[in-house]
Image (cartoon, rainbow, N blue to C red):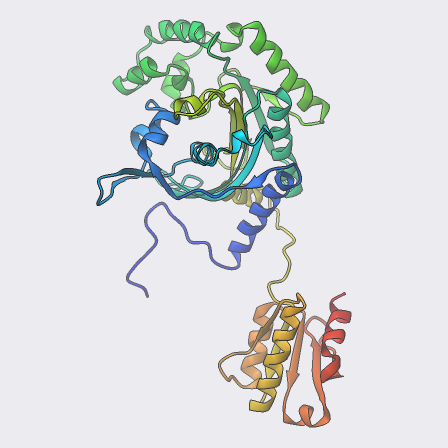
Length: 420
């Protein structure tokens, strides 16, 4: 038993379950790749001010959950708690917005870190796939991203998820609502931390999950009643485009999400089988974030979908993905000459794109065949001295048990025929 264990609130991905995580990442990213999104990868840590400015000082992420460190050169860094700010920073640094093709459409996949109370579905290290469309204010982009996420979830077989949709207004109409909401919140019995949050960003109080707070929010002013005509028209166009695509959603007047940079469109994907941690992903428009981190005005929209929570949603629905076998052919050699020959054949099969493995460690026939069974291989190739003397190897179907001798030089064709 190892002396060390994974840190509290984290997890290891190991076979066979890790194959499901890889399949989920691929399913989420495939619609993005087919829609003009290019892959971007950013460092696991950034200047702490990137998140304090962009994500927001009033958020729990910045005030309570970031892992921060000071380097030997006295740089203040933070492990990235989310992806959008990092991706936007990378796009600005590389001047992608100046290349004349807006929006800049990017997707990413990686690990993120937040110091939270560890529980099922909420980890201190978690995995997300995200997408950002940078530099264009167009309701069709908002609708595109929502539709692509819906497509990804449905390609996995998920059905018991809901899409919640809201508009948070813009810099013209939100200040009026902010003042009305602050006035309402000032009359409530709130703890000191919540009052401080209400002063910095009162919309964050609407996102408070505590029942004692939610009860007091009954009768709170609704942002939809304060939207300017431009924001109303924008939101209605998003709704119309999603509806025309056959994507079902629910309007949620209290949906604000946990990040300060959102404007106008905001949305969340929730699943009924995950208990209190029901959100499997979400996102929205963040038209002012570029300016917050020192860039030009670049209206943008994006989302991030949780890989681990999506896996939990699959398990809640009893969905088992149809994953390709890790190994299609397993080679078992008896004797040194057969070992050298079959090792070469395994290499040949791999070069032809066939998943193949080999009985390592010099095991006897019985032990090696047990390894072949455990590998999940469809076929086993077995050879000993007598087989080599006859110029053949034995090709065994591990499902039916049928076995046939095939010429050594014809092994590749025989394997292809069996696997077709």
